Image 1 (tube, helix red, strand yellow):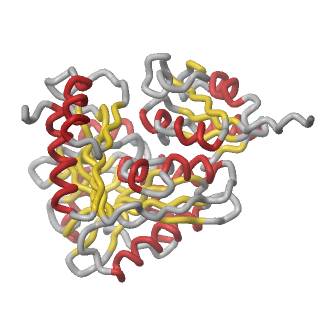
Image 2: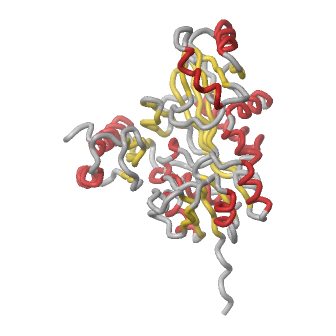
Image 3: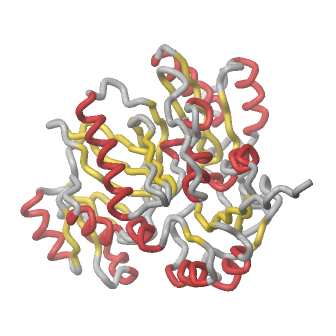
Length: 385
C-alpha cells in the first residue's frame, strides 16, 4: 500500500490571535502549521504544537523555522525585508511576496503605487518639516492627518493635527528619515472594508463589503454586509480590492480599509496583507473563513466559496479593561445566547487590548447587532446583566 504524500507545512511569522485562528482551518485542510512566536505563552503558541521561539527580526531564527516548509506567511506585516529575502533564497515560498508586502509596511510606498494605478485615495503628500505640513493644509484645509510611514496600527502612528497642535508629531521626525505622510482629513459618511483573497495562479475571491466602526482608533464593530450600501458603490469597492491585489501581486488575504464619502466615492485608507479584524465574522458566518482562505491561497489550492451563511453578521471586539475574568462572563453569555459565537484569544487582559471577539448572525439586523453588542459588553464588564 502506497504511503500518502506528506502534507505541506505553512510557517506563520507572529504568535498573535491571527495565527491562532488559522489552526482550525489547517486541521480541516490537513496541512501542517508552524508558528514563529516570541514566547510559548503567545496566543498562537498556546494553540499550535509546532512552535519556534524567535523574534520576527531574527534572520537565523526565522530561516530555521522555515526549513522544510512549503510556504512562509504572516500574522503581521513587520518582518524585515532581509529576512524575507533569506527565506526565499533558501527555496521557501514567501506569500505574500516581499514585493507586495512592502506596500503594507510603508504607507508612502503604498500611496505612490495606488496613485500610479489610478486607485481612489485621499489627497496626500510626503513632508520633511512642519512648514510643509502647513503648506499642504493651506490647500487641503485644516485639520490634516499626519502618519508615520511605518509601524502604525490600531490608531498608533496616526494623529489629526491643526495649526495649534503640530508639536504633537515633533518626535516622529527622528524615526522617519524619509519624511512623514500628511493626508487630507476626509469628511466621510462611514468606514468600509473590502476583504479579498488571491492565489499565485491568479484565482481571486471577495467577501461582501463590510462597515467598520472604530472606538479610540481601534476597530470595535463590523457589520456584514455594510447596511444600505448601494450596489454600484459595493461593486466599486470590491473591484478596488481585486485590482489592488492583482496590480501588486498579493498572495493570500488582502484587507482594504477605506472611506465612503458623501458624494459616493470609495477612498483607500490602508492595506493589510493577512487575515484582518474586519473579516473575523467569516469564521462563523461565511462558507469559507478568511483563515481557511488565506491558507488555501498561499498554498495555491482552489479558493473556497466566500458567500455569507446568513443575511446579516455582526462582530464585536472584546477589549481588555478592568474585568480580568473573561471566562466566567463567557459562560454566562453561552447560557444566555446559545447561537452566539465567542472567541477568546488566551491573552493577558490589559486595557484596550484585543483579547477576543463575538459574532452573531441572522435575518434581522437590529436583533443581531443587539445580541453581539450585549455579549461583548457583558464579557468586558461594561454591563452586568
